[in-house]
Amino acid sequence: MSEPLPAVSRSATGSPARRPPDGGRVVWYRSFYWRIAIGFVATVAVVLALQAALFLWLASTNDTITMRPSHIAAVAAAELSSALEADAGLDIDAWLAREYGRGPHGVFVVRGDRVFRSGPFQVPPFLARMAWFRLRNPEAIGGSPGPPPDGRPSGDGRVRPRRPPFQPVVVRGQPVAVVGVLPAPPGRDPVLAEFGPTLTAAGLALLIAGTAAMAIVVFRPVHRRLRALEQAATALGAGETAVQAPEDGGDEVASLARRFNRMAADLDARVQELRDADRSRRQLLADVSHELMTPLTAMRGYLETLALPAAVKDDATRARYLGIVTEETLRLEAIIGDLLDLARLDGGAGSFEREAVPLARLFERAFARHQGTLDERGVILERGIAPGAEAVLGDERRLEQVLQNLVANAVRHTPRGGRIALRAAPDGDDVVLVVEDSGPGIPPEHLPHVFDRFYRVDSARDARSGGSGLGLSIVRAVVEQHGGRVSAANGAMGGARFELRLPAAHAGESRPREVSVSGTLA
Image 1: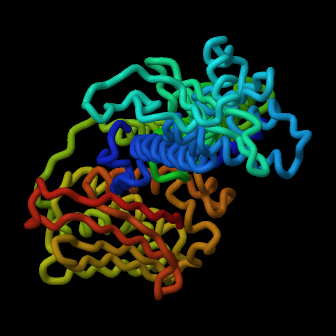
Image 2: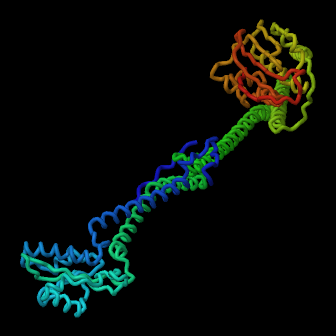
Image 3: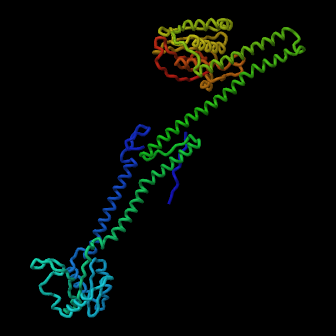
């Protein structure tokens, strides 16, 4: 009876010495091939042992196989004498068939004018007459010295022809019958003739039972796991990548299942990456469309208003409208420029210079660019470079872009009279740059997303300040292109704290770097 196959779990070998993907080896006694070999040897051994036991049992129940005809005649005569003494009306035919019908020799009894036989064989008439004669002449039954009845050498050393032995059946001291034995036909093996059919049938039955046992114990579990693996492969071919086959068993099939699951997991991870990339692409397209639509809508509205002579009656209003259109145009130009810059960074396009960049020069340029705004709002920009952190290795233009974006972000969110700190300190072969402000900081729920494109903590405030939402994304892309890392948190000053880890100028350009990004936005 068939039973249900094991369910294929859904989620995200040729020789015993072959190594599975997990680094282990298939243990020899759990190998499928060794189990087949051991099962075959065990089945043959059990079949032979049971056949030997059956043969011994059959031989113990029928000892006439190895007895000589003369001995059989003597035993049969004695047993029949006892049976007739106990039952004078004994059915001698039935008794002979029951006691000697399975033997290779033909046993017959001559009593009066009747001949009784142990089987369906014919007693030659001359033997029947000879037995009847000896019954009438009891002195002839004992016989005079002559050739032995079984054809063995006589006293003079000559072998004489075999003749059937006769033994009298004596009941209460009187001979009432004669037992004769016909020797087995020449060329017939009595053991084979007696036990051959039984042993053959038993051997076939045992062989079938052993084969069935091997199929149940060895092949059935493997067949079930192969069917489960087949189902998993079918599901994978149909596009269901989050599928796994059962790995139990510890043999070559389990090794194959582990390899399949590893392949399916890799394929599923790649499919998920493609889906995430497609989702990000769609989201980016939507974000870009939204960001570009806002200034375009404002520009279109003011331009349509300016195109109506009656709508703008004084030069001051016209100049204000033109100024707004100019600001929106510059904002649109900045967004497009940032998008193109970010696309080049993500695609690996453009060239990066690898040279020692003095941090003092970068700090000075950041201060000079924002000095007017800082003075106007009374914000103090502190700068500090620890010994050993004077220079980093990278592209000066790109690193200045990173620093300018972070300082501009800090200036936008630092209140009047606040402070902004630019610090650099060595850390092994790296230099850690910190840009920290005393602004309101970043809400914890926004920290994991601040480096995402077009992400704003306060959309309305950032839009009014002219930010495109791409500045921190560009910062992360540039830092990673330099083999560094960037992260964000809330600092001791109460505001946002951005930390950049870049290779020091003395660390060497060819040393491999680990890229690990954790992002935030102020």
